Image 1 (spheres, one colour):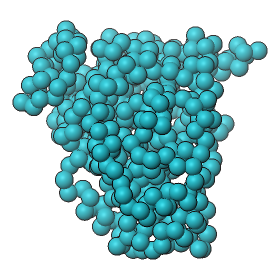
Image 2 (tube, helix red, strand yellow; image 1 turned 180 degrees about the horizontal axis):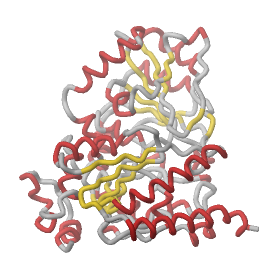
Image 3 (cartoon, helix red, strand yellow; image 1 turned 90 degrees about the horizontal axis):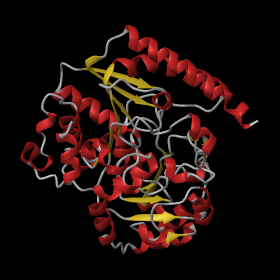
Length: 416
């Protein structure tokens, strides 16, 4: 019975392998082709966007290709993604470099060409919620029978992370050697660390939402609850009416859903002018940059936000259930860089009190970002997309900057 449930996956795997062998036989690998692929969005976003732009700056002669198809768990969505996978196989076979930012199924079905480098630039910073092989035995995680046929997170040549602190966790989650994990920094955080971006975003925001001008902005960014890419309807834990009643007109609340959460926020007339749902016209980094305070639960957005040194509150109503379903790499209650609350009333009191201890936020940021120079995109492209000079790379002196990277990384690259 279990094998029957896996039959569609096994058939797809066989078809993908046949197409890949065909492409390798009849289409040459292009040494200047760099593909950026994602199942998270239909548009270029996050780490891949910043790497794409940096590639064009450093290597205008290279050929960038984007494969972007947000996975949808409906029947129609699965069929559409199946055809997308078949197209992607050609590009995997013909690309010198293949960047992804999440789980990407066709990669795990094949044995890539020796000269193809698959680079995982994981969408989440730091190491917070468990994922990949770390979730074996959890309801969130993959089952062992599936893993016998689909070697998830396999075939990565390099994994880009934010700091050496998280290397052991990514090694476990991807079932891969620590030497493949490079703490070069997350490209998307360049936007948060470079000067001048805040003013431009605020001008756009005030143009779109004039009601926000002059108000302090709270960002509410709850995490995704569900299995893998399967969409989940949003369950509200924050009481917007109570928050508005307590905070008055001084604040406004922006709600940013996780990409896998379905539906629009239902805002009644009494909350208009206080609650705003931010759509796809603003990416996560832009919203973080103009927010004065963050409320979340278990979202890895806290790592990015810590770079700004601003206060965070944690609304953890279902902590025990979440630990049972997925769990964390650290003890949640001692780990998060801000106070933990069970209800909206206490959060509102904390905000009104205004006594925010940011020491823990700064310490948290320093722990999970080895380098905070706004040049991560440049560093990743310089390090990986330069095969003719990569043997000479010495991380400690790259571009005459001290990147404080460990000796195993230098050794791994110099042996290439």
